[in-house]
Amino acid sequence: MKKPKTLVLTLTLVLVLVLLLAAVTATACAPGPTPSPTPSPTPGGGTPQEIARDDGAMDSWLSLGGLEEYGFMVRLDAGQPFVVTTIRVYSRTVETPVGDMRMTARLTDASLAVLWEGFVPMADIPKEPAWVEIPVPDIATDGEFCVLVFAPTLGKDKGPYIGLDQSGPNLGSEQLSHWQPVDWNAGVGRETVNFMIRAEGYAG
Ligand SMILES: [Ca+2]
Image (tube, rainbow, N blue to C red):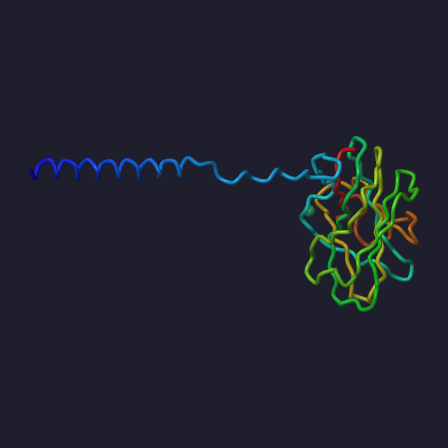
């Protein structure tokens, strides 16, 4: 009489184990949460690109501003119609600006006709060299375009400064005074300098 009871108990235990195993397997195979769709990288759906003439490794720097309102310009070319979303300036300052002083950037076409002008508060320029970003509201360019940068000086040796790449030939950097290209007197060799000013955007 004991053996059938043991058999029933054993069968019951086996059944329970099988059911438990089935439940665990079902849980393991259940689909997880659906990942969110990858957001479009740009408003236009294109792949973000950074257009640069510098090599990203600063070799020296130049002071911005001065009584002649010295500024700096780079000629850039994405090789196709291009929508600019951000201007980047590698910069640093010694003195911390006060008030509403600004680093101003202009985006122009190849003939220097202004397409857009914006700014970043000079208080956002760090003490250690870093890329300072100026958001641009999706400005369309076609072929060569220019980025011009000016910031008022905070005094002798107080900044702000712009980073220089001196590792290769000048690919389109020009010195400005009052927003116009002028004869080079920046104190560094013109032929082997590229200002660290970049444009980010997407093919448009
Ligand atoms: Ca360099």
